Image (cartoon, rainbow, N blue to C red):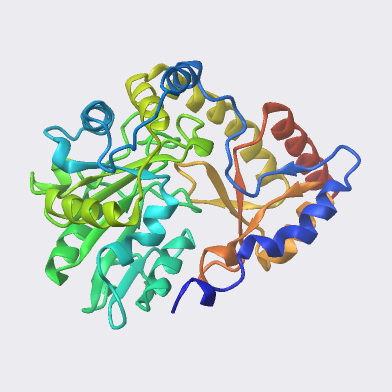
Length: 372
């Protein structure tokens, strides 16, 4: 299978509902795709501007300053000490890494790529791109013997589910039993909401409580898109097993997958400044506190959603019917059908809208609930 054989892009199917929502007298509230709307922090934008004299080719492995910043960030924010330059690697956003990881690891027909039951669709895209078999399972005991790559996602997209230390230990143990790479997508790791994640950090797969100090076979994937509003910068990275990092570095050198130098400088600034991350999380917290009760008042049940950037909701009917109902209120949501076959009655609502648009959505949802 090749790129030309991939199915139509799923979000194109939302276009008619977006048009319906835009016809609302007070305009659309787009809660479908989690694209940040808040400004890029000044400390980051300033670092980018200073670094614009980028006349030389950037190194695929990243500048020494960036590699050090990534390692320091893992120690400071994720509780993972002892990482060196050989453990980290910048990527051109996280989506390209998710899509290309099976290719970069040399997977192909006969290999299995595991991903969560409620899953970011690019895990499956990456498997199909190389002719491997995608397999949805949340319980590591269900992972097939042919598994060569297992994705876990915590906090989850779309469902906001968090894997605690014991769940991550079980995933690592099963991956090692199978001789598989465990890739942990942790892009929403700073956004914990419900207890215990409102006060305790969401654990990383590299956490020593998970690994017992042995990083063999484990990769952590992270993006600055959400915590730092850098989606347009395509600023992400991975960390973990140095043998795997070296293998991926070699492949990425051949393919020219390197971050522009100004973006690398901006990442150093973002990774070194925790204040803007705290401020951004507070914005999302306030929006969540406005939106969640309104969604429930409109007749939806919120499942999981203990962390991350989304509300995972159902009103007990097909997701497309819920999307249509919300579109009539001028609200655009993502259907659960996009995230696998296991949750056809769920919708995903993003917190990435302005305070004013979130308030508008809440008012419409409460009014709809009062009429029901």
